[in-house]
Amino acid sequence: MTTPDWIAAEHRESRLRIWQMAADDTVLAQTECIAEGGEDLSRTLSHALPGLDPGTPVVVSGAAKLPFAAVPCTPPKLAQAQRDGDLHRLPGIAQERPVDVLHGEETRVAGFLSLNPRFDGVICLPGAQSRWVHVSAGEIVSFRSVLTGTLFDLLGAPEALGVDAPAAFDEDALLQAADQVMGRPANFAGELAVIRAERHLSGLGDTLAASRAMGLLVGMELAAAKPYWLGQSVAIVAEGNAAQPYRLALEAQAVPVVVADGARMALEGLKAARKG
Image (cartoon, rainbow, N blue to C red; front, top):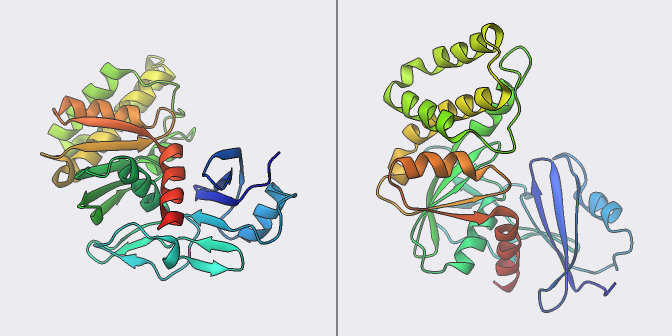
């Protein structure tokens, strides 16, 4: 295989995605590995890429230490990276009110903006923490994080609902639950208990139970994030089926939505940061 000119990497939710890049930014190879937050990143990279030539620059997002850049700002570039030998950690972004951080998502935002330079609106990034990022004139103006993905995973425990995310959510069940909770948010916890009871009494299936639970969670999230999406163009940057609940719920509110692949946006953001 051709020797890479540089390495692009994204640290996200305990995983490290690595692209070996040619000088013209062609992807030569791609791999993924587990990388816990406290683990030495250089060691993880050396294990994942045992034949990598010393001195090959590595640009990584989502692995920076403080300090972070502060909003409003453009997504960080290579000149702002925290350097440790050949490792360049792109900084995250911090916000004072409400207190919040982007820790890698800003690079996905940068990737979307590099491909859509005239976009003004909101970028939604589902995940363990979903993010709502307001961008204007190429800058990140403000953002808000919500623990929807984490809460859904917790609900998957056997003592709760005992479900995992399906390959595809049931659209009708998800939308009905989202609409229900947006109209009566005080009933949120009670509706989760209804799903649990139906699992025991009537054998409510995994897909319907997961779809209704996700609908309740996304409905609550949309209610809280309404100042971000109301009257805005929204881009959802996600992988797999993570975009589906958000796209369905937003389109039900007559919000124009486009969907972009999260992994591709991460790579485009790393390329944009390096070119800086």
